[in-house]
Figure (spheres, rainbow, N blue to C red):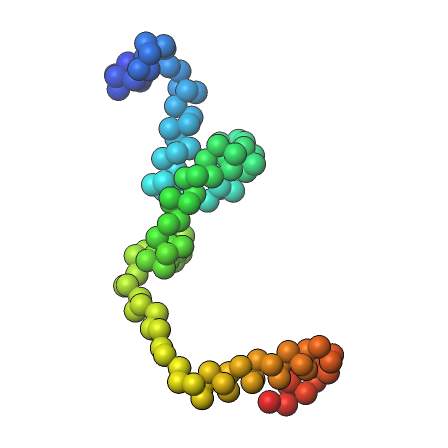
Length: 122
């Protein structure tokens, strides 16, 4: 099989075995099949800890779009989502800033006093 695929020897001329392709299999499963490490560990007969030790950097690449909000997982499949609107930055006038500071100070005072029941009434 390796001879037919042209993979019998590595770049240094050393013979490969099917076992030597284990790393390639794990890498491709993580990057392209979107398989989680628990399922992959069961499939490969190894521990999640070993997979994390050797392949955790791939998990970040694999989940980059999800972490950035450009994709979501639905029924085990990663699906691109429409771009979300950028967060709008607003400018508060002096009165709004003063009221916000006063409210924060009031909450801090109540928290220091330990009487948090009064916060529930607002």
